[in-house]
Image (cartoon, rainbow, N blue to C red; front, side, top):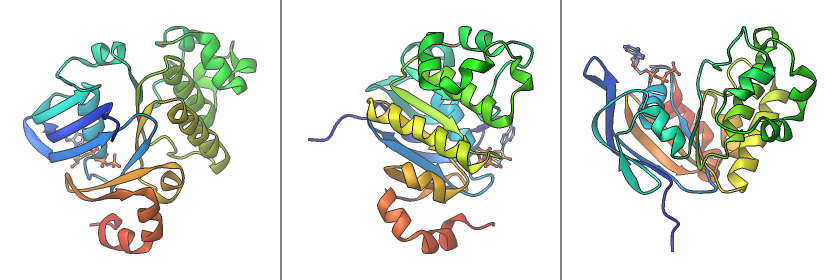
Length: 230
Ligand code: ATP
């Protein structure tokens, strides 16, 4: 029997100023799996993720979190086991690394166990960290709460391959401990390397979905058909 999803979008529509740019998207994430949402610029990936998190109201359809429909605000969903790594890294520049971890939803020590690289940086202002270190901080902060669902937006954007591998490894470990992970990425190859399943969005609709194995095996065709510039 199949495990129930921890996160589900059912015919979800979303957008800005009541104009939908995401239309009737259905997807699900199960405990222990990494699901990647791919798609070209402007396809609606971030909009979908923001709506799943409660940061943006939906314009139709339903979000189910741990089996229950929800239209709760973002902070309620976070208390209910949702973790978020937003697109803009969201560290507070003027605060130290330690204080950034303190204001996070989980214990500082757990964040440091997950990313020991941050220990020597604890007293440093977050604004002085490299892009990679900031992303580790953002990831450590989200994972320290042991979320049952983690949403991550363009985790790898602009970062060196070595750091990306490290971050992906951390997501894989979180999934192996039972979290469901939804990862939005523009670069297919690296995300598919750690993902279990994939959805491709184009112009606000799901145009392809399948296993990551299937996507990797047909990457050229998929890139040609769905991921190119419009
Ligand atoms: P990218 O990889 O470039 O972030 P994306 O797939 O995440 O692309 P979205 O950011 O979800 O795409 O954007 C979907 C559509 O909504 C685009 O047409 C975009 O211009 C529009 N859009 C995004 N943010 C806003 C906003 N705050 N107000 C109005 N329109 C927006």
